[in-house]
Every structure is written in structure tokens, then in C-alpha cells.
Length: 237
Image 1 (tube, rainbow, N blue to C red):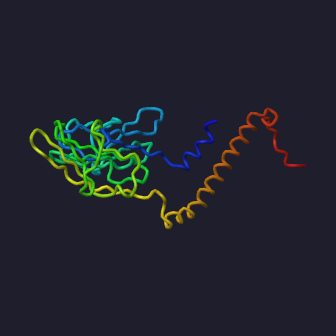
Image 2 (image 1 turned 90 degrees about the horizontal axis):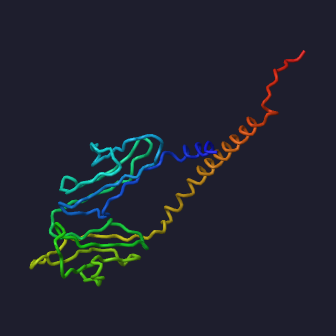
Image 3 (image 1 turned 180 degrees about the vertical axis):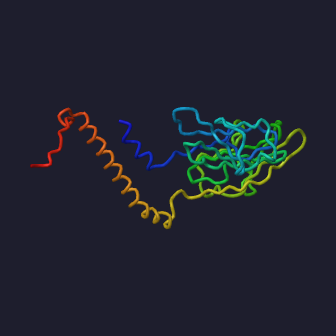
């Protein structure tokens, strides 16, 4: 029963590896611990995972890559893949050497997404009197969770953000982070392009249906003992 799915999978092409960050913040401070996890399509047998950093191969072949203490040289773009997958999504890591950093998962959100901001200190030193700012105005947040969270962002949440906090008797400001919130609805020009792909998917679906029908027809003939008896061809008298 698995055979008919094979042509369909081949039409779809090889699966794509998925790369994620743990913790999820793309911007970190020197000395932070970062782990990159590569999720790949599982196939029988052992297949090593290949890693790229700024386009250059890394001597890593496991499905996770942990950097115990990042430095500036670790900044850049990461990707992973195997012989049975296409290249993963690109994950960018930005390492800075500030006292304070406003961390965020990404710089671009879609309306309705959840956005979490974290005011992070160097070597996770204790912070107090933390304040978040959006376009220069201070924000109210839950001091018990420490992070600033918006459950559903809208276009009004676009703009510049930074945080302020005290470490000991010193007050520090984080660098500004510019966040953009976009409308998830496709533009008119984008939606019109979809019509160009409809004939392709119709043809692919038809080919899959024909292929599946041929498979079951052939299977019935093979399993039918009456049709399994072969007769010599008669050329006529």
C-alpha cells in the first residue's frame, strides 16, 4: 500500500530540513549559551547532518550544535541539510558585547503573532528597575514574568524598542531594536500569481491519480489466478 505514495512524494520533491534556535532569541550577548537544532526527514539507516556557517562547512555532523559561550565570530547565518533533504531555512545569529540587550525571536512579525521581548544582561547579572520602551514611550508589563509580551500584535506594534535596567548602582540602556509587523493577507499582485500555479498542480494531481489507478489495476491482475495463466500467441493459419 505504500507504493502509490512514492510517485507522489517524488513529485513533491525531497523534504526540507528545519533549523531552530534554543533559546529562541536571534540576538545574544557574548558568553551566552546557544544551541541550534536541525530537524530532518528520517530515513532508514544513519545519515550524517551537514552544517553551514556563512556558507562554509562546519566539522559537525550531529542533529544539534551547541556553542557553550558564543563570541562575535559566531555571528552570521546557519543552515543544515542531509543527502535526503534540501537545505534548511536560514537562522541568523547576532552576537554583541553590550551590558544590556533587548532580545527578540525575530525582527518581523505577522499580525496576530505573539511577540515576546526580553531584557537580558551580560552574564545574566541581576537586573532591577527594568523598563521597556516603544518609540520612546515606556510600556506597562508584568514584573513577575519580567518579559514584555504581546499575545496578538498589530501594525501599531511596529517601531523601535529598547529596555533600561539597573545592575547594582549603574543604569544601562540596551541598543534599539526595530520591529516590523506585516499584514498576513497577500497583496493583489501576490494573489494573482497563484493562478499561474493552478494548471501545474492540476496536472500533477492527474498524473498521481493515473499512476495510482495503474498500480491497483496491475495488482489485481497479478493476484487474479485466472488472469495469471499465460497462453502462447497464435499467429494464425
